[in-house]
Image (cartoon, rainbow, N blue to C red; front, side):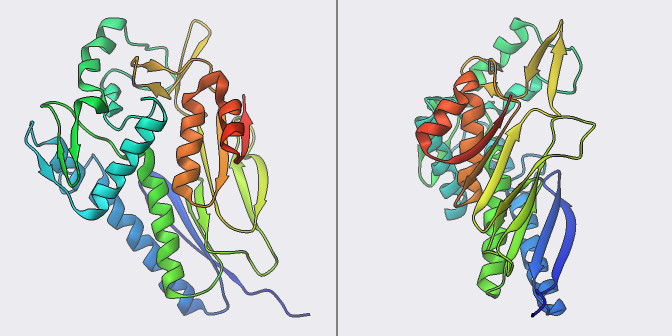
Length: 289
């Protein structure tokens, strides 16, 4: 019986997440090159699309002070995707809603902002206020975009693609629990641990997938708790307040990580209707309340 090829692991940190690349091959040099290519793609995307650094395109857009900004093809593709999801979600998904972090800090405390503070930033939220005529984006002064809701999943897909372009070997890209594979392992399936909602447990279960991608959205670590009420970090940009009665976590399996991440986020934004939404989309999912 022939032994299965070795699994090489490469770990690093990016996009505020622990990242891991696994490559199944007996060629250690090949595994190293593929892992380096995947990490380089992750860091390129982080540098380009983070809102925290002044060097990227998002910073340039956010600092335009009302002036139009022409963007490159990759950025235009992400903005167009976000605009499409905004329309499909009836405004629940909105890349201009990042300014709400100025009044909401989900650190497990009881510091819930008052209505006046929330309403003070709502004028800066709303994709419908943005003029988007690809490749030019024109935002009112003071408004910002935040691609954090899709960027990590996009990076996972791009890193997996970087590996697939170099070699036809099974590999898995995992950025903070959002992951994609280039194909099935020699023994059939990848073993995936889901983050536990219980701090006493390491995992919330184990999935086995042959290929495709998985993404999870949830509030296991980011929430507020006041007078016995838990406030999820999933904010409804239409109101400026946390979504009412969302699941604790939603995990979705899909063809790409971007698709899986979008569907898991949209399910959370649906609150108590999360499972009904996922059923209507016909995707494989795991919902924890």
